Length: 105
Length: 105
Image (cartoon, rainbow over all chains, first blue to last red; front, side):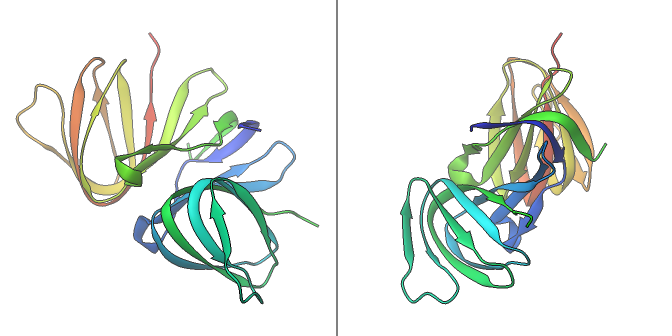
């Protein structure tokens, strides 16, 4: 799906790491929230409240998921899941475009 | 207005200047297009096809509009118009959040 229809978009951006990571919050027609974001090259760590599904639309990066020893390598597009109440590390090599969704139970 | 309702959001980002300027394309309920974007500190120049209305949501920057000698200083939020078939220069001092609309005649 390349577009979200009948969505509510919050105008103001979410800004992290001095703008090296930014996103827009979108409320979907089914009530679910997603954020569409960009990560510039660098190393980041993000905590989660609830579980998250990270869809990498494009980019070259690696991800260290909670409890894992091995980094997950991603070139191009891929999706990974992050459990709630945890955190994950990212090492971004090229500008990375992502869509993060927050599944409600 | 802090949100756009019943909008269509294109998932993939628009990326310029190696990710230092990025935006998302949003089609509004009335059919008008806007882009919600972020500019990181730096100097940029953008061309226009049709006229554009640039709403700065937050940031510290200055803008040189076509045909002008004096730079337009912006701290915080402001709106400026750019004629079509022209270009404008920006010098971004702090992470700047913007909404650009493309009025159709």
